[in-house]
Amino acid sequence: MTSELDVVALIPARAGSKRVVNKNIRLLAGHPLIAYTIVSALESGLFESVIVSTDSAKIASIARDYGAEVPFPRPAEFAADQSPDIEWLGHALQRLSAEGRTWDCFALLRPTSPFRTSATLQRAWAEFAAEAN
Image 1 (tube, rainbow, N blue to C red):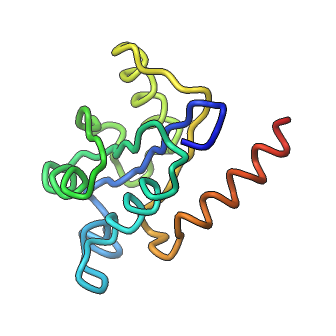
Image 2 (image 1 turned 45 degrees about the vertical axis):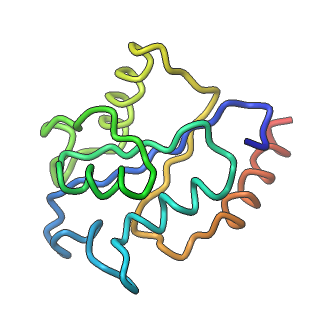
């Protein structure tokens, strides 16, 4: 990790997409879409943890295969079509905090941005850190 702050990457990946069914695990160049976000986050060296929030056992299994943590399932009430991010974020951060896991800040990384590289994350972090100081 290159930061003085402890940072976690949180990746939302619910199973119920209506417009593109199973979009988070559909293959792109031989890998599930979510894999690109997980790998970029891990390779960036910025995050203490890379955590996926999902309501799907299949997505959880794939996320773990690519190196992410999925410490608990997302409850159905936070995985509906109209569920705002604040609900699943609050749930995840409260659960993790109850387990004694806390961070100074988090990055929300959507799996629907597969071309976001580790270098992009590092540049974004540098901009954020410069503003925070």
